[in-house]
Length: 119
Figure 1 (cartoon, one colour):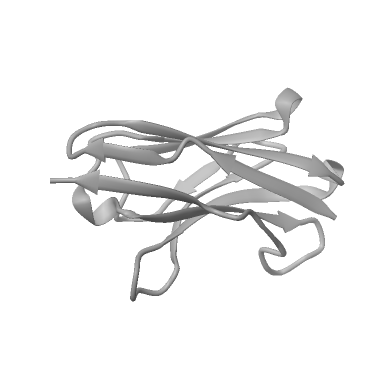
Figure 2 (figure 1 turned 90 degrees about the horizontal axis):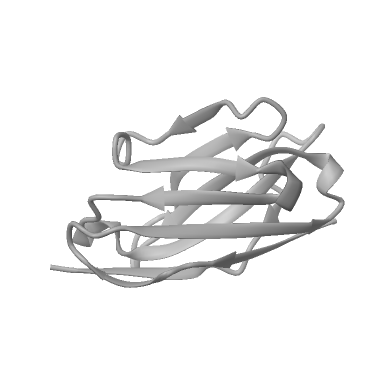
């Protein structure tokens, strides 16, 4: 199994920045892709960004392209989400997740961290 712990959430004004971290432990050798998702109250969970663990290849959702950047530190088994030019509509609980090798879905999830952007 893989355990995930997110950190770095908080309250920020519109236009500001935050960096989220997600530290993985356990069977980290099984990680194929790590992703960030978010869920706002009353809304469905939304894909934010993902990174392929071995190659560093990234992909971001349209709503965050040009503002958010996903990166990883393999030595620390940690993935980051740098969020710039934050908007009130970015307010949500942010979750990191792992897609294990051989799996067709994200099968491990963190507990989430709250990001609140004030106008």
